[in-house]
Image (cartoon, rainbow, N blue to C red; front, side):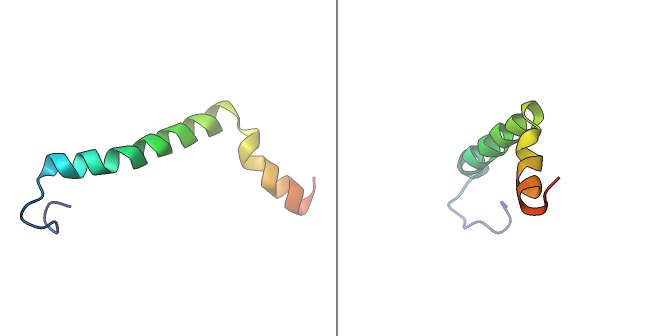
Length: 49
């Protein structure tokens, strides 16, 4: 990212900007890890058992 960012943007700013997205992914992964039925719910509704 640093290679394509404008000159005034430093690497610290890039990391601070991407942190919320990484946090959301971690929350989503934890939700699926502790509740695997979240993943299988929609296919069961769409295709039946």
